[in-house]
Structures are given as structure tokens and as C-alpha cells.
Image (cartoon, rainbow over all chains, first blue to last red; front, top):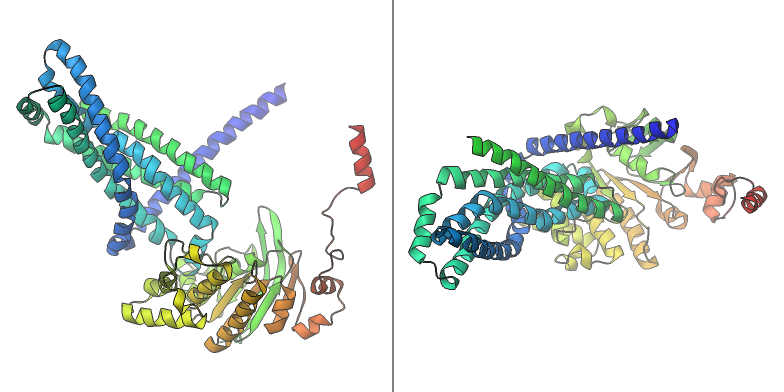
Length: 263
Length: 268
């Protein structure tokens, strides 16, 4: 009985230590990626190429999702606002929800699922097929040549994708509010212009998506780089990418929002 | 300058608390093709990684061109690696790059040559392995033998003085195997390089290598030219060269007595 208790306590301890150990590894990995970023910025073509894979190829899912999110916001918002006779404010509601919260957060979640998993699987398989070892044997540092360009591509793509998401979402809200529900077009746009602040709303949204970009990309890269070189290892790493990125995005969103609101 | 471009002195290496090598000594003279042979899991590939500085020995040293590999810093190791080319077991081609770009990769990374010169060099290397016509294919479109040849062209892209081969014959049909055998020998002699071939294909290897080291249980158990080893009376070498299932390397993994084992099962 006593032995059993000690054993399970020890198990918990091991698991906690393992987590912290991995967190340390990830932090070191992040540090090395930053230190070895020179080449990916000097040879910017490498980063542009990765931006095509992470950014451009994620566009379809981002834009389609944004359209639907915007349309749903329009319907739901109208439903509530008309009870208070202020259905013209629908434009403000849609724009603020998107620019401040939904744009950065939903984009980051979709990015983790679409681009993050692809990055993890690609790097994991490069390791499993000894491509990273081959690179090292050619005296080329894989962190500088493979990891850093993907990192910067993700960090640059995310705010752009979030901006496009918000834009498309506003358009979706417009489609529902003006042609479908008959809100006055002038009121829809002018209220939006008057009530969305550049610094407080838009810049804060961009800051969020920039932070999410760093978090999602470095998690995807680390999980891929750290994956055991087997089919099972890579599949588990891909799952961990989605789970950890999503948790990180939602957690960071709370932290960032609480700082931004109190300012 | 010593006559041996690579020297392994009294090298020990352990992995996960398991002693993989126990005091290995090897000499790789310039211009020769030397094979390291041994059963699967005898740590042959690990030796190549120790030479390339990807692993650190627990004791002893590896000298490349007179320099102790594990005493070099990162820049020093990279400097040494530029003299080495390595062919990985399944080629390890970069799957996102075409055949041409794979061979051009080391040149683009390490030289400032203009693209026209790189094109000429890549075609030269690809022609040497007979795949000039395959330059636009992606690695996924290549057969196992072709991928190995492209990887070989990439390994010699910068004219290395040491070429390492990790199981170059694994999983190849007899024709591709013959092609690789010829390429290893001819590239070695044409480049004036030294080749280290890790393999367990006795018959193929004995045809073209100059010297052989047999590794088993972490030590060098036999060495010599193929002729010497073919006539060797040593039980291990005899078993290995003639491919016998049982001998000094037992067929059975260590297990309790068979009879006892079966009887015990009945009682549980």
C-alpha cells in the first residue's frame, strides 16, 4: 500500500520533471533559432519560399472560415441588437469582435491545424529520413537552413493572415446585414469607422497575432525537430502541435487581453 | 601530414549506458578504400558518426587529417566536415528539392560560384553517376538505386578527400549494386580520395576494397586484405564470410534453457 503510494507519487514527479525539461529544451531551441536567424534574413528567398507554403497555401481555409464567421456574427449580432433598437451598430459589433479577438485567435487556431501540422510532419520526416543528419554532415546547420526560415515565414504570415481574416469577416457581416437584413449601408460603414480605434483595436489585434505567430510556429518546429524518428513519433508530434498550439494561443490571448484592457 | 587521413585510437563509446565500442583502433590510409564490416547492430554506423563529429567518444580519439575531432569547436568540426562526403543508408535526399538542386545544395551553401558554373559542375557530377538526364526529377520519382546514385553525386559535390558510405548496398538489386560498386572504386581513384565503406555485404565488398576491419561486440576482431581474410581460419571471420547461421555469433538471442523454459510455461 505504502509502496504503491510512493510509486504513483514518483510517477507524477517524473512526469512534471519531464514537462519542465521539455519546456527548457523548447526555450533553448527558440533561442538558437533566433541566434541563427541571420542567414534566413540575408537569403530572404528561403523565407519567401516557406511563406508560400505556410501563408499562401493557408489562404483558402482562412478566407472561407472568415466569411462564415462574419456572416454568423452578423446574424447573431442583429438578433440581439434589434431588441435594443440599435441594429445599425451591427457594423461596429462585427468589426470589433473580429479585429480584437476572432481575427487573431481563430486565424492562429486554423494556422496551427493547417500549417503547423504540415511543418511538424515535414521536419519530423526530414529527421526520420536522415535529411537533417545529411545536412549536418555537409557542414550546414539545419537550424539555420531549415528551422529559421520556417520560423520567420510563420511569424510574418500570421499577422497578414489575421488581417485578411478580419477583412473577409467584415465583408461576411456586411453581406448578412445590408443586402439580407436591410440595415442602412451608410450607417453600417460610418458607425464602424467612428468606433474602431486604430491604436486600441487594430494595433492591439496585430500585436496579438504577431505573438500567436511566434508561439504557433516555434511549437510546430520544436515538436517536429524533437519527434522520435518513427511513424508513431511523428504522428504523436503532429497531434501535440495542434493541442499545444491551441492551448498556448488561448492562454496567451487571455494574458494579452488583460494587459491591453487595463492600459 | 601523416599517411593516414583518418585514425581511430583506442576509441570507446557508450550509448544509453551500453558500451558499444571498447577500445577500437583503425587506420585509414590516403587513397585506399577500407571496409568496416560486422553484424547488424554492431555499431558500424556509429563509427561513421564519430568520425564526422556528430557523436563524442567516451574515451579515446578520432583523428581526421591529424586533428582530434571531438576537441574541435563547432566551426572547427564544420571545417573538417567540408573535407568529408557521406552517403547515407537510403540516400537522405532532400525531398523538397529536385535532383539538380540536391546536388547543387552543398555548392550553393559553401561557395559563391555563379549559377552557370554550378550548373556545369552539377551536370558533371550527375554525368559521373549516369543520371544527367534525371536532373529535373524529384526524389520521390527515383528508384532506390537511382536515389543512391544521386546521393553519391551530392556527397562528392565539393570533391571531398574522405568519402563515407553507410550501407551503400542495402536494398539494391544486383545491377544497381554492381553500378554502385564500380562508382565507389572509380570515384575514389578519380578524386584521389579515401573511402570508408560500412557494410555487411561480404561478397560485394571483397571485390573492390583494399582493406577490411571486422567489428564484433565492440572490438575489432579481425583485419586484413580481402585475400587474407578469405583464407582466415578465425571462427568469426569464417562464419561471416561464408554466411553461416550459427557459430561464434549465436543464432539464439541469450535465453534460459529451452527445456526449462517450456516446462515452466506449463506450470503458470
